[in-house]
Image 1 (cartoon, rainbow, N blue to C red):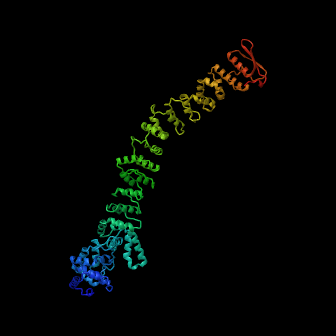
Image 2: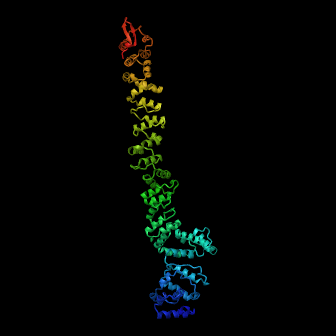
Length: 621
């Protein structure tokens, strides 16, 4: 071991080291396990080997001694604490040879440590220089510890001397740690280091990209090994990634990263992507939506739609209904707007409210849209309400043919336009009846439509306005309602009564047969009517006798016709005279049959003598 303690003269070191290996080729592999050999002595031997040997000799030594393994596993390798060796390395030739040999051996340090004493033993900072050189030459294995060491001690080495306007949490914490380290207790130092570790776990790639210096070297190394870097991040992020969106997209666009790692990365995102349009891999768009890692926005929905249409993934995402969607003022190309509108219209799986909101705020107008024939009823009603389906002859026929359940709503919602387009060819009796029954529709509109109808229309129990009733009775009278009309005559307005009266005059035979069901008011109107022929009145009176049981009640009708001649009819056991004529003859015969008079006889050519009944028992039903 005298070799390690010899004079620092360069020639002696070089000669002695060369001589040793020429005599003892496996020297290092044997003595490294020697228990009396100090670690510092072994370490100095390796340093000497690197600074003195040329490439060919070094390869031979390594072959027999495997010094690479020793170097790669010594994490404090660049902590040159032995003064004499620093002096040697400061010599230009040795320093250069040392660096070259590290590269020639293709050293990859498994784990490095950074010491605050790197610059303490040399005014030239030889330790830092060698450390930095190996960093730039990528002479370390990519792992979480090494990456973070390079971030803190290379990329942000001079943070104390940088003017950072708005420091991020990592920068703020590192700055405090470096600035106040000597004044902080261990507990506070550990607390700050924990914060740094947390930031490095969740924002590693952002911190690297935002590095204050030398970021390009680390980024280049990472980008050559992005799949490995992705694996490192996923393993160490504790299931939470909080990178800036710019760097998330940059990360996801690396083709070298396996898709399953990208999917896991997306799953770990703490915040949703606000704009994923710059993500090259369209399959990742599906993952973003499926994992709900895309911001719920009009732009993102349209961006995805333009590439994939309304597939199940997009529909499920939209139906999350995370906010009210509005495309009012959205910057569309006109062709895109048209396509989007039509496809939304046909996307029946969308929730009704969302479906309505999108179509409404698109504010797209096209009079010539050809609508599908399989639109669900609830969607048809929305399209009608939004005036997407315009009221015109083509659409009216279309709704009639394919969406009968929504037809009435379509008409009522567009009634004014409906009234404008209706003609004899388009007119529908069924639609008229619906409109007539709608109390919200004004009388004028109902009358306008009635002009197109020449079919019978019932009015009973319909609660139509008087004007509508009258029009129907005058123009669309349904004779099946005759009995109801004469029965309920007294319930109608005066104008309507006149119309029913005229209808009855034209159906007099039916009237005679149903006097027992007729309103007394209508009967009295006939009996009092000056324009009513006597023969008609006689027939009415005679037919009344079929169901009237009391002479007093009959007389109330009779006196409307013959108020004076029959005034004594209701008296008992008395006689009175009346004129001989056909009317009186027929009436007296019927009164005798009914038992409302005892007898009658012709006294002379011009007079009948009538004897009234003695009591009620003579009445015949």
